[in-house]
Amino acid sequence: MEKQSLSDIYSSMGMKDCSVYVVPKIRSDYPKSDYLFLLYKPLLNNADYRILSLSVFGHYKFVMKSITSKNVILHYHWLEFQDMKSLLGMPWKLVCIMLFKLFGGKIVWTVHNLEPHDRKFLNLHLRIHRWMAGISNKIHIHAESSANLIRDKFKADVNKFCLLPHPSFPAQRIDKQESINYLNSSFGWQLDPSRPIALIWGNISLYKNIEHLLNLITEQNLDVQVIIAGPIKKGQETLTERITLKCDEETDFYCNPSFIEEKDIPFFFGATDFCLFNFTQILTSGSVEMALSYNKDIIAPRTGSLTELSNSANAFLFSNEKELSTLIRSSIFTFYNE
Image (cartoon, rainbow, N blue to C red):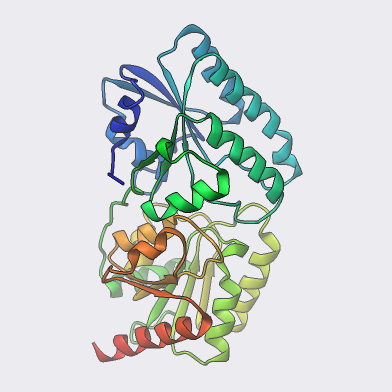
């Protein structure tokens, strides 16, 4: 499948000099770490496209625009909900999308996951996603390896698929000792630069199996310091409490369960020797992309689009716990023998 740009995708639908409504909102205040900002950045100053991003409360705007103009695109991301409260907003979203389509608007849907990460309301999500695949004019995927999975799961027309890889993140390289000093002084930690440091990066959520990683390291007495850094995903407060308690009990575990400001991101990766990921199921991962942008070795499961990293010099993939343990030991060995 040939890689395309956003302008390629939009123009293939006969759409130029048009308005593009993006859901959810682009966080332009975070130009180095916001996925949506980096994805749409090439078009923000493009005279052919006017990029407008909306929250759930602003959905009516793209409906109204489709009534007055046929030169309009709706580009939708993450059509899902996590609890009963967010479920209540789903009918509003679906009605707006349906009306937009009815009035002649063109829809691009970016598929980030086969299922919501918290695996709640799976049957309802499946019905919604199959409907969205049916009414979308284009289905944007980040990796060719995802195509068959999405086709089978959502009964999607492969002729709608368009490939645009996940945007890379701009990386600011900072010396390891300087990074460790910064983290220790900022968070009251005691990271030791003479020992390996692993980073578990991104939203704290159950699907990342963070507890399993920490238990594995403890039970096998692996000589590695571990940093867990990232905001708490909605509904994962109890999990975070267990993880922070584990970090309080183990001197080699450090946790910062909060949003990481952009100015601090380079220090977390600067201090890190390798990154650990233990997803249960995933198609694409912004956390992995950021780690690779910082040229960090990653240990991750052989699943979803991550399988395409098999030939990457920085990616080490596992299929079971034994392989995971072996890769961690190998990374520790490499640190002490470089």
